[in-house]
Length: 131
Image 1: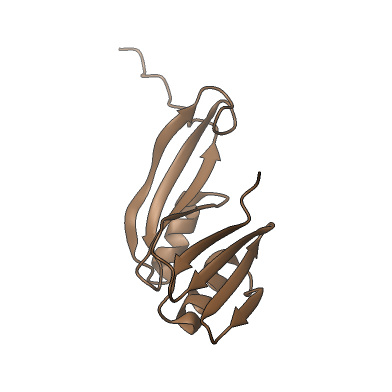
Image 2: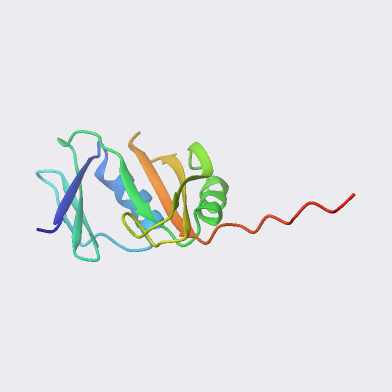
């Protein structure tokens, strides 16, 4: 079984198309209005923005969540939570073993929360200098 589609609420399809086109770096795959459906193709998983859909939280993988948040703040996007390490992957159960998972949250143009996620090797913390 594989995930084929995720739906997210969108009151204004044009505004949502502009926001997600910038966020995802791609144009919509299809728009059907009426009835009010906007699709993006995320590597074979459809992201449906729909007037009648309930709000949900999307988690999107980005190269570096810290860089992404900085760029989004520069564009005036509301940041709900700044980047932070939320988990260390000691094994490969939920992500690459030996990496830290970073997350931050933004508000999209429609008022929905979107999580941005990146995984990186843990930061090296320098040893304290001897006294």
